[in-house]
Image 1 (cartoon, helix red, strand yellow):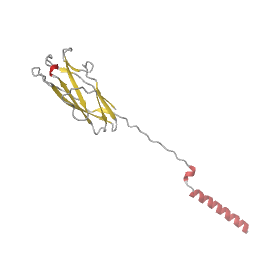
Image 2: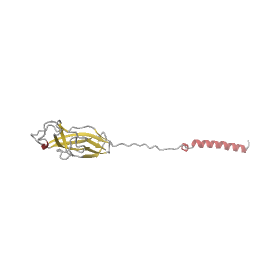
Image 3: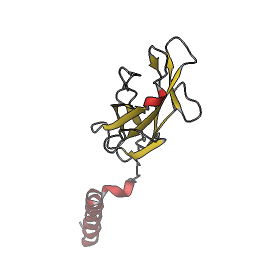
Image 4: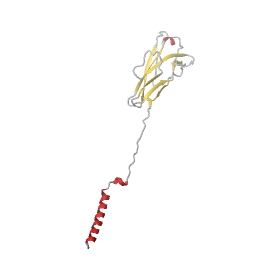
Length: 176
C-alpha cells in the first residue's frame, strides 16, 4: 500500500471515529426541548356553622317583673385568613328592627326582646342594643370560633303578657 493510500485510509478511519465520538459525547438536549407546566389551585373562602343554639329565657314571672337575661353560644369556622361577616334576620316575628317572640296559640300575643352577639368575648348582659353584624377573620376548621349570644326581655314587656309559651327563630347568616 502506498503512503498516499495509507494516509487516506487512516484519516477516513480517524474521521469516522471522531464523528462517532462526537455523537456519543454530545448533550442529549440538542435533539429535545423543554416546556413548563403550571400547577394551580384556588382555596375558597368558606364559612360553616358547626352547631345551632337555643336562647332560653326560662319561666317569666309577671309578679316579679324584673328584666330577664339569657345567654348561649354557637360555633362556626371559616377558611384560614378569610374575612367573615355574621348577620341575623331579626327573627320570624320581627316588626322592623324589633325582635319579638310569638305566643304558641295566639298569634297576636308578642313579647319583644333584644338580641346581641359577638365573636370576641362574652355577649353583653343585659343586651340593650341589638347587634346588626359581627366581622372577623377565620382560622380554619381545626380552630372553630365561638359566637356568644345574649338576649334581654325587659320586665315591662311581659308583666301583662298572656300565659303560655312564646318562641321565635332567628336565622344567623355567615358570609366569607
